[in-house]
Length: 607
Image (cartoon, rainbow, N blue to C red):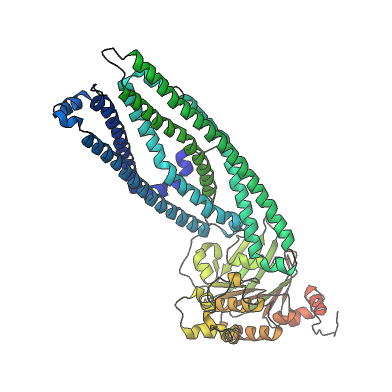
């Protein structure tokens, strides 16, 4: 069931609109003043035609006419009438300028509020949310869709107020002069209004298709630029270009179809608008001729007024089509933005303890985890990592190694069993506190397009230079950095593209060391460094970490063999655990992998 409109826009649009309501209230007041000044200028022209030129009673309030008539010849002064016309036209222009200025300020404040809210939300949703939606689509929503809403507010929000006020005032003025002529001058208004609403209902789905096509195009560009190394390495430039061309062709095709629909509407409404003005002119002349000798004639000034007011009445109603078209596109954008805002935040599962020691044993007690079923990734995992231990994890691709350590950070939630740290269930620990005390280095580390210094000190921005250098030395990257022309102030390209794979991993290790967390996880994060550097880093980590716990995930037996405890996973199950010496003597998966890697065994076997 769809929510009502207030609930629909409650998550994002209404709070943003309320934050800038002062600008919009002031702009609405200026709309009224603009219209009043504009219509008064039309009455000045009518007054000149009827009274100043022809000496007839003008179509203005009788009390005002009596006052002007009492002024004598000055009331017929061309200069004063011209000055009055100029003054009210200038006031209309001034209020129009102020209206646009204030609504633009309000819209920008509103857009900023929306962008801030979206960014906060994307940082508050669970990790799993980002795994199921493309980055390009999220970027497109947070930029293009927000800009669509901002443009609607700038160009059309006050236009709605303007249409209502102009129609109301113009209709009242016209009825006060001649109700018959007013009905004739409004003859095509129902056609314009109905066609506008029908057009809005019809065209909305085309706006949705264009937005979705734009999102797909953005994703294609983002993926290509992010994976530029892979594209070049495998010579896939042509294939990627063809893929982009196909997406671009689809986007252009849908956009052209939408433009065609817009053209049909605007062309048709133009014709109807001009027809309405022609009707006012023709019937105005007929009324003028028929009532010329009557006591209450339809004057030339009235003809001008009806033509002017009809034009000012027709174009706002015609503009309703543009307003509704933009409203259609805006509602689509708001729906896409609200999909983000309505996503569930990452919630605390238990007591949310913030101040608790996390330097004790880590216990996995019959832990299971799965995406589709409760145990399709990990099944009944139990082990204890004691304080001060290095725990190594070995297994084939897809055996659940990374999932195991992501559960420890609660990026995923266990579907069975329990994980405790120092006797405290991790579901009872505040997730920010938990992650602050668990540092992780991934196999493919993400580096920001900033300096090396800023990347390393990301978790400790106020760290001293000595701490920075110490962490870099332990990560075996200090000497490499020193060889760069700008040293630690060298700019790292997007996603660390200016560094080699091994250098990226070592910078990420240094960044994790700066966190000084009691639990550290290295998820195959030394796979791109040579074995000698690997050994140096592990020795430095063991010396530095003291009573903390190190989790090492690797495919290399040389990386794992010195660990205090080795866990061997196979298809989500813990099939072996023990020290290297214990496991190498068993006829199990660990020994078979060691033989394949030509690692010495007691029997001297080789692959």
